[in-house]
Amino acid sequence: MASTAGVVLSIKDSFLALPTKTGDRALEEVEKDISSLRQVLSGDGEAGANQEQVLQIALEICKEGVLSLFVQNLPSLGWGMGWSEYYSGTELASSELQVRKDLVICWCILLGQKVDENYCCVKYIEDHVELLDFLVVWQVIYFSS
Image (cartoon, rainbow, N blue to C red):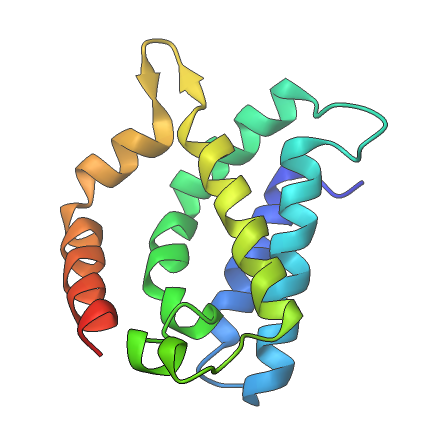
């Protein structure tokens, strides 16, 4: 298994490559990395996750700014479909649905990681209030389209 730093850097690199690579290929890499992250964070079905490794990944994700990349790239991950597309019958590809599920699972696990008395990922978001601004503005645009 790759090191925690390696897992996080792979995710970071795939997100940073989104604007420079061909769309489908770049998204495939992001989807693969998020799926791998989910498996590390939640276990493989037979064995639970290694809690020390999960905590190390959470700390590394904060250190490398990957939470910011998660938030800033939500529209690229199939979360940009507005209500008009939804009501017109536009469907998401199964890979888009799976990456959404995986990302939600990752978020839930990461936000629950506590170092001493602080939830490290929650603290990261508190310290980067622009992420909350992005989410609010994006939600207004998302739900008004």
